[in-house]
Amino acid sequence: MARPVQKKALIEKAAIKLFASKGIVKTTTRDIAQAASVSEGALYRHWPSKDKMAWDLYCQRLEKFITKLRPAMFEAATPLADRLGFMVEAIYKFYKTHNHEFAFILLTARNFPQNRYPQEHPYVLLSELLDAEIAGGRLPPCNTATLAAMVLGAILEPVIHHRLGYSQAHPIDSGPAIGRACMALIVAFGQEDTPQ
Image (tube, rainbow, N blue to C red; front, top):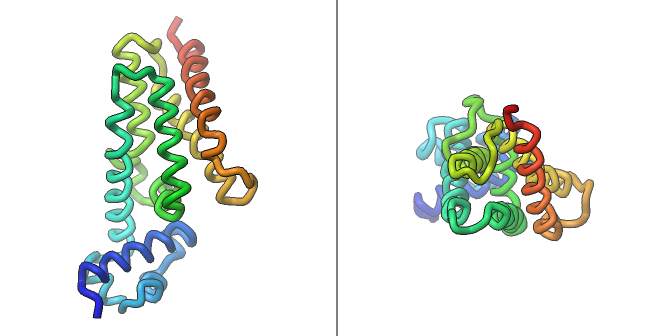
């Protein structure tokens, strides 16, 4: 018989895979229990509801991912272009090695009723990075909220197209070019959005 900790790990793995493939709304507690080979009651011993489970797993996994990204992203001695390249590479490597977890934490944010990104999210990280670059005089003042959304979109859209089968090439193959394109986007946007 599996121990409670092992059961919880099985439930989490099954839930993440289902949330990533079917979506949070269409996934039922019964689906999760069947995929994890546990009773539905086992789920409720750890979470009061499916929505609470989804949000807890989302925040935990996202924080773990951001913890790996944050130190390199804010290494001030490293040029911004290199830090962006690192972020793109890390995101694509994570997608390649943890497909379901990636889809769950980076492509399902709109499925939660909170209507806000959690405190640790690539969008928040990018916004903070751009604000730091502006504060340091390395970028002109601009609308960093819009710019961060544009850059994150440029990084994530190739993944979405790959997942949907529109592109056979894995995004990691174009990672360096996408990193350079993101840097060009930042420079161009800063020039256009700078108050006159």
